[in-house]
Length: 337
Image (cartoon, rainbow, N blue to C red; front, side, top):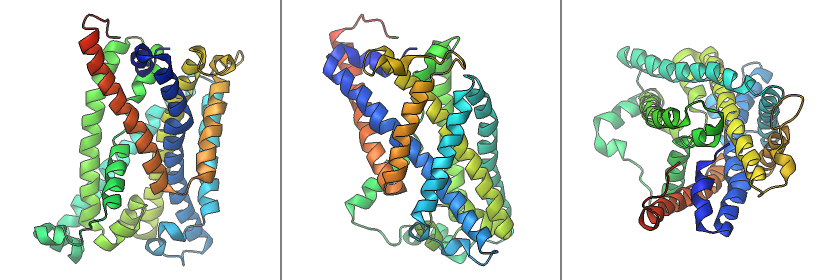
């Protein structure tokens, strides 16, 4: 297994290499996985509370602070255990399931855009949203000078577009990694940009600004606005599958990074071994899952986890970019893997 970022950083002293390995395994990857699991937990908790109240509980009146934290964490933990089980028994089950879940995820995003177009053409656009789109002043209404809010928005956006580096953690399992990675990175980034743009635009077309500000569960509120309680349940189910897909891919690459670091000597060798019965890096999977579970249990919620994860992640992204420039200057003839 070749981990590209480790290959570059190793030339800049052993200490830097060690710091990245421990930060990536103990903080960056684990906190990011916990964010995905927390999103799953919030959506499933909203649906569970609605069904438990026989439909009397209105979705849109539940802000994130109203949700029972223990239930959100329980649902997030169950999602983690499910994905752990998927990856534990066969090395190719996870990637095959990922293909199906990716189709579901893209279908959900295209469905949201389709519903927004249909409802907008039928004139069901909220008056507040119509005013915002017709006037730049209304669109920028309610600005804030709180730098912390801008930082959180920046980190959230950066985290949403993160993931393009995951392919580099599993190049050892690719038949032609140079070709596959060079094609996957630009295509995936452009696809995500287009899908995110159309989805966010759809939310602002059909959801009143007050709901957009308050909620973390946009797809649920979107389904509620377009098709009532049934639509909310359907869209929430799609989001749940989408979160499982993201968590599935994340744990897959996370465990491979952990196993590679163990084989490089940064962790005990036991975490780099493959299970003789299943052929999977079971020890690395268990360590990755335990660290993720710690963030799920003790994390303060979506916003704090995003801030923590983004600070760690983008510090090392910047360090890697700086390292590439230094290597280009100091080692112009060095082989680029």
